[in-house]
Image 1 (cartoon, one colour):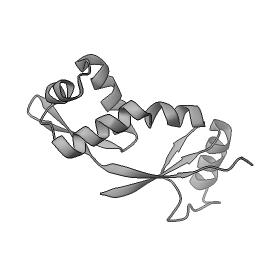
Image 2 (cartoon, one colour):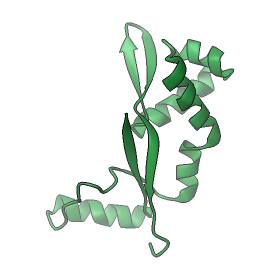
Image 3 (cartoon, one colour):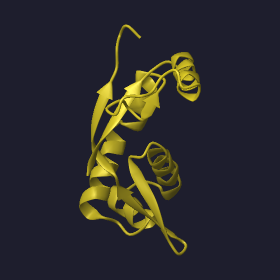
Length: 119
C-alpha cells in the first residue's frame, strides 16, 4: 500500500502554481504532493480520528459494501457515503463498483504531510 504525499498550500498559491505548471514554467518534482489542501483545518476534516478509524476498518475487515461498513463502524449509511466520497476524491480509498454495490478499498494508510509555516 502506498504512502500518500499530501501538501497544504493556500488556494491563491495553489492557483498560481497550477498556472505555472500549465504554462510550462514549473515542473513538479517527483516527490512533491499530488494532493493539496488549502488549510490545516481542511486537512483535519478529511484525516480526522473518525475517518482514520473507518480507514482501518476498511483495511482490516475488507467490507463488501457501504452497508456492511456501516454495520461494522456503527455509522449511518448516508453520512458514511458522503465521508467515503470525500476520501475517494482525495485518493485515500477507492469505491469499486460491483453491479449496484460500491465496495470501499483502502488505497493509503500512511501519509506524509508537507507544510511550511512560511507559506
